[in-house]
Amino acid sequence: MINIEKTCFFIGNRHAPNTIREQLKEAIKKHITNYSVTTFIVGNYGNFDRMCMGVLRELKQQNKDIKLYLLAPYALIQKIEVPKGFVGTLYPDGLEFVPKSFAIVEANRYMIKNSDYLIACPSAVGNSRKIVEFAQRREKQGLIKITLL
Image (tube, rainbow, N blue to C red; front, side, top):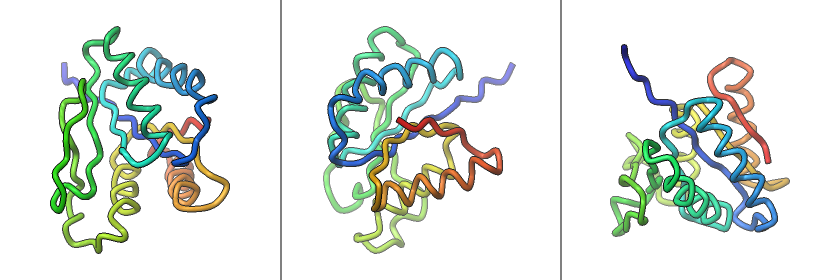
C-alpha cells in the first residue's frame, strides 16, 4: 500500500488574538484525526504563526507520527534555526528568483498550490486575505480544503 502524506499549511493575521488558540487547537486535532494529515507547515512571522507552532509542538507530544516543518522564505539570505520538535525547514522551489520583498507572498502561494489543507485566520485586508482568496479559488476546483477560524 502506498502511503501518500497529507499536508496542511497555515495562513493568518500576524496580529491574531490569543483568544483563538483553542479553536486553532481543535481545528488541528480534527485535521489529524478526521483528515489523516501527517505533515504541517507553518511560517514564523507573527502571532498566528507563533500560536500554530506552540499548538503543533503540544500536539506532537500526543501524535508522534506528525511531521512539522518551518516555511523559510529567506533561508538563502539568513540563518534559520529549526524550532524544537520540527523536522526541518522548507524552502519553496524557484523562490531564489523572487525579489526579497515578495518572498513571503510567493512562498505562501507555493504552499497553497502544494498543500491538501489550509487552516486560516486572515485579516480583513492585506496579504493574508489575498492568499486565502487565492486558496478559495483553488478550493472551488477541488484542489485544497480550507478551514477558516
